Amino acid sequence: MRNSQDKNQYRMPAEWEKQKSTWIAWPHNKSDWPGLFETIPKVFSKIICELSKVQQVNLLVRNRKEIISLTNILKKTKVNIKNLQIHVCKTNRAWLRDTAPIFLKKNNKKIICNWSFNAWAKYNDFDYDDKIFKCVKRINKFKLITPKFNGKKVILEGGAFDVNGKNTLITTKQCLLGGKQIRNKDFELKDYEYIFNKFFGVNKIIWLDKGIAGDDTNGHVDDIARFVSSDIIFIASETNKKDTNYKNLKNNIKLIEKYNQNKKLNLKLVKIPMPKAKYIFGKRVPASYLNFYIANKIVLLPIFKDKKDKLVLNIFRRYFKNRKIIPIDCSNLIWGFGAIHCMTQQEPK
Image 1 (cartoon, rainbow, N blue to C red):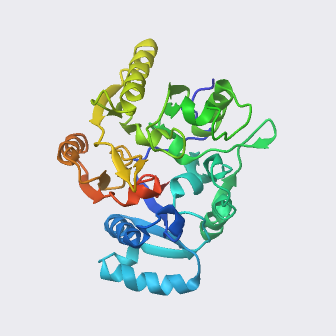
Image 2: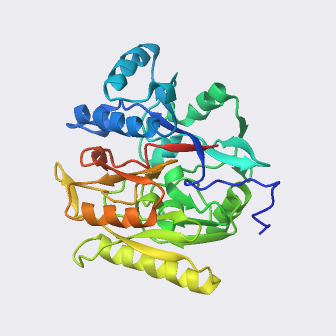
């Protein structure tokens, strides 16, 4: 693999690096939150409000009529209107982590990366989501690249991997190499490693095994392991031996420890407890504290009316001394099988 620090190559900045804005899509797909949809706009409003205090928010809506009604709604939530830009861009769902283009840098210039999207190989309605990159390009006239491998466009979601902004990436085999919900048919581990190296500027790739129960993306890493600095990883940990996640999460910790030792990386692992198994209308949902979002001066932390909320809040405060930790109640949001990280996409400065 080439030297990942070459300035002439692509690099994906880490989430904690200086951001220009956060991209968010206003929720409208009621089938994502059946029976609870009316509670969801309030959660989005809260998140937009908090982000607008520290940086620009680019909000995607379906039509011009929504711009007027939303501006009025958001004004009532004390959103900083100066930091809010609303754009018309049709979407199928609000999970921009997976559908908005990923921002890269090359020679210190911003580039948007258009990965293909197939709705996690699970849903049939994704025509608008697969074209969001066109809206983003039109709005800001960014240079666009479309990653291909063996002549084919590559399908990849932002929640499937996490980077440390230098030379290391973390992902899961379940999501990218599993036989269920296939993104890129016949892709092997080495093919993904080549792609990650070429487009993200990484040469160390940590492959975890499985994600958590209730995750309809089939193993996204942003529910189980996240870089919080170039050498610290927050890793999900389950202590209840009877829980489905216990064995899988324990195995993931062992895999990172082994990789760390073999490559002499000196990565520090910080265990983040899982909330108690959460069910909505009898269905297990992927509630995890790891689905947080790092912005310029704040960290938005999902909480679930759980006994461990306070404990986790204190861990975050310990490791993000220069950022304010803002807890966001995601007890209903998680019914859409995603939380704060899933609905946000950062644009670096």
